[in-house]
Amino acid sequence: MSHQSPPPDLDCKICYCPIEPESYCEYKVHEDDDEWSPASLCYDCIEYLRQGQWEHHLELVKKVDCRRSAIAICRNVPIFVHEKSVFCCKKHPDGNCPNNGQIELLWKYDNDEVIQPVLIGAKLGKDREEYIAELEQYALAFEADKEEELGELTKKDE
Image 1: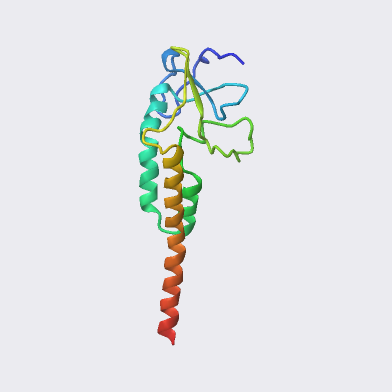
Image 2: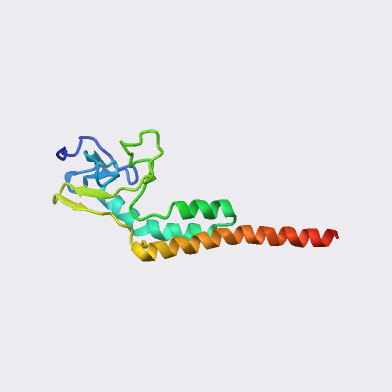
């Protein structure tokens, strides 16, 4: 499918400004998607997400306080810009897309450029694998702490 011109009266869902041709983008959730989808965010807001979402992820990791949330973090380590409410997957209309709102390709109308919107600071390749392994160990530590606490409680009862 070829690209579209910006739809009339399209406003960005973050800054609420009209999306003009110089800020209009289309995306693919999966690189092998047949069609491009119009983005309901302007390029500036997509770039804002790209620059801040990895730091947000790191802040979430710092706030993890139980095994369940640690496991959820392990399963959702981002690489690309993501916003599940605006980047819909046509292959998984039920919302169960493995990309979880991440977009693998972004096309800019103003310069006909296709880019991979990788998050600034995101771990890739072997660094990513090592990072996820560390998170998984962190998640397992919650279970170990729980077992240790339970062991201490049973010792007190004896």
